[in-house]
Each structure stands twice: as C-alpha cells, then as structure tokens.
Image 1 (tube, rainbow, N blue to C red):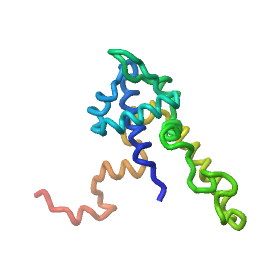
Image 2 (tube, rainbow, N blue to C red):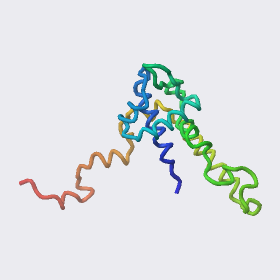
Image 3 (cartoon, helix red, strand yellow):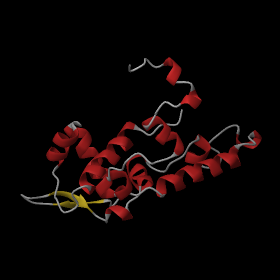
Image 4 (cartoon, rainbow, N blue to C red):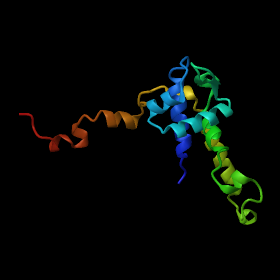
Length: 165
C-alpha cells in the first residue's frame, strides 16, 4: 500500500490553514487549537517546514509563522519532502544504487523510477493554493449521475417506485 505518512498529512493540513489567511501570523499554540493536533507535533512540523524555507518564523511577542512564499509557489511535493524527505516508492530509489540485494536481477527497477517520477510530478503539479481552496466536486459524467438520479422509463426504475396516486 502506498500511503502518505501521518506527519506529511499533518504538514499539508497546517500549511493549508496558514495559506487560507496568508497575512496572519500563526503561533504553534493557535495552530494546535485550530487543527486539534498535539502541540509537540505542531512544533516539530513547523520547525521542519521553516527549515525547508516554506515557512518564515517571526520572533518576539507577536511572533509566529507565516508562509515564506506565495501559496501558488509551494507544492504538495515540497511539503511532503520537507516533512519526510525525498519521495521514494522503493528502497532502491530511496537509498540509491547498491541498497538492494536484488538490484542486479530486478528487471522492474527502471520502471519503478518512471512510476516514482510520475508520482512526484503529480504532487508537484498541485500547489498549496490548489489544496487549501475549497472546490466543488468536479463535474464529470459519473459525478452528475451520482448527484442527479432522476428515474426514467429507460432505466426501469419507474416500475419499482411507489406510485404517487
């Protein structure tokens, strides 16, 4: 199973809240209250995100954290990498050549790199602005069918519906 780490998910959550009010200075305590995440977790994530230069730390009585870049200049891939390190689906991609005993006999290793690169590109194509802005369900034929299911004689639903008379 390919799954985002809990910390990376929380990092995206924190960054999304900050991006929705880009002129506001957020304290770790305030972000912990807003997101219901434990204070130590929030502090750890804010430090990682600031170290990666995605957040800027402001010292002093009115200090806290603000975005270091515009929301459209920060990608989901950048947030995940700041929290977890480089995205790698397999050990050989994560640790490089020689990390796997089966590397010499593995015909799929070059293809894993293609898959990993496609995943990284997909995550790079989604900005913090994209992910932090609520959007309606995209309209597709499938979604329209789920949202609007009017019975018609063609689908045979009318014969199963109780009559209104």
